[in-house]
Length: 225
Image 1 (cartoon, rainbow, N blue to C red):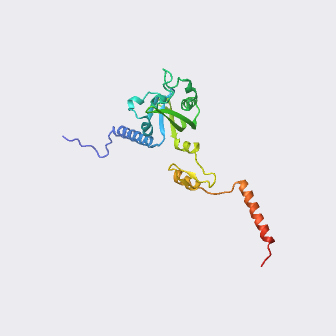
Image 2: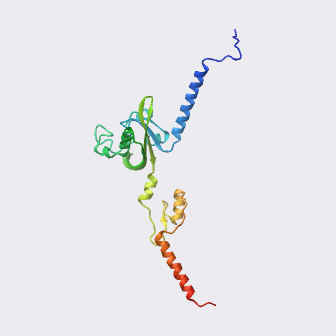
């Protein structure tokens, strides 16, 4: 038996169905955006326990999701100080200087932390690895609870650049990672896609102007032809 409905009939459940679909689509979109971010992104609580994380962070932690959630960031990232005391991450004497934990504390105190430079020492396969990052923390509320969005930008390669660059004292060429000597302009272009321009510093500008004036004076003293 078929029930004939009028053409203008509106299903009373349709608004609820559309709302559910829209909510699901929004969550799917937000998750995709979250995982597309190249920086390490965590959602943490006051004790820096991980509540959520993105794909970039998952690659660094290399652990199952059940192992990561509700664990302190230092423990799951294998910070070298997280095992110094039985209480774990946040309780060692070294933790008082931890940029990540201090930044999270500032966020929960109502202050926004933007790109604070941090040196993070991690254990990987029994060896110490130094990671340099820019730490940003913002506070937000979700389902009636405060959480902190912790973002760590890995700048280890840039930090390595600042620590040691070999420059020839005679010709000024720079040595790249392939041990090849090249001009400064080529080095930055090939390594960092940075274009260099040229301008005189004040000292060289005065020196160059004196040289030009000296040449002009010498030429004016020469007899004409």
